[in-house]
Image 1 (cartoon, helix red, strand yellow):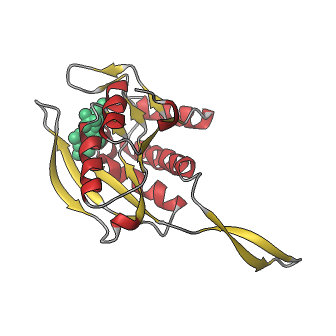
Image 2 (tube, rainbow, N blue to C red):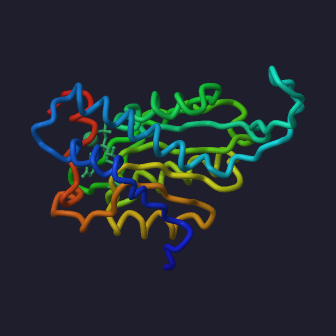
Image 3 (cartoon, protein in one colour):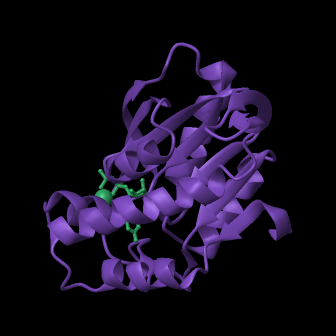
Length: 213
Ligand SMILES: O=P(O)(O)OC[C@H]1O[C@H](OP(=O)(O)OP(=O)(O)O)[C@H](O)[C@@H]1O
Ligand SMILES: O=c1cc[nH]c(=O)[nH]1
Ligand SMILES: [Mg+2]
C-alpha cells in the first residue's frame, strides 16, 4: 500500500527532542504527561493545517481589513482511553471549542486485540471533522476498531488519526481499514515485539501517563 499522502511524520527538531524525553525510561509520570500534552498541541497544529478559512471584514486600529477566520465543519477530538486522554488538553489548546468524544478500549493481553468498554460521542459527531487521539499505534487493532465505530456513527470525510509513536504494522492495517484516513505521527519505529509492544517505542503509554506501572 502507498503511504505517500496518508502518513505525515512530524520531523521537526523540537518534536524529536521531546519524543526522546518520552522514550527515556527514567522520565517520571509528571514530566511524561507534560510532554505528551506539548507534542499533542504541535501535532494538532499540524493536522489542522487544512481547516477552511473565510474572509471576515474587520477594522484594525489603523485601517479596514479583509481578515481570514476559520469556519466550516466543526471539530471533534476522540481520545481512545486511557492513554488518548493524555492528548486531549494539548489538542484543546489549539481548538478550544472542539467537542470531545470518548472511546474506551483495552487490549487483551493474550490476543492483543482491543476490547471495548465505553463510548460516548457528541450527538452531532456525523457533521464534525474528527481527530482520533491515541499516543500509540502498535498492531493497529484499537485504531481500526475506533475508526469503524466512528464510521458506523455516521462520520464522513477524512478521519485524522493522531499518534506519537507508530509501528509499520499498525500503519499498514489502519490505512487498509479505511480509505479516507490520514495518520499523523512523530515517529515510525522498527516494529513490534512478541507482546505486540512497539520497538523501541516508549513502553506502555497509559501506565506512564497515569503512573500505574
Ligand atoms: O495498536 P494496538 O495494538 O491496538 O495498541 C495500541 C493501543 O494499546 C494501548 O492501549 P491499552 O490497551 O494499553 O489501554 P490503556 O490506554 O488503558 O493503557 C494504546 O494506548 C492503544 O490504544
Ligand atoms: O508499545 C505499545 C503498544 C501498545 N500500547 C502501548 O502503550 N505501547
Ligand atoms: Mg496501556
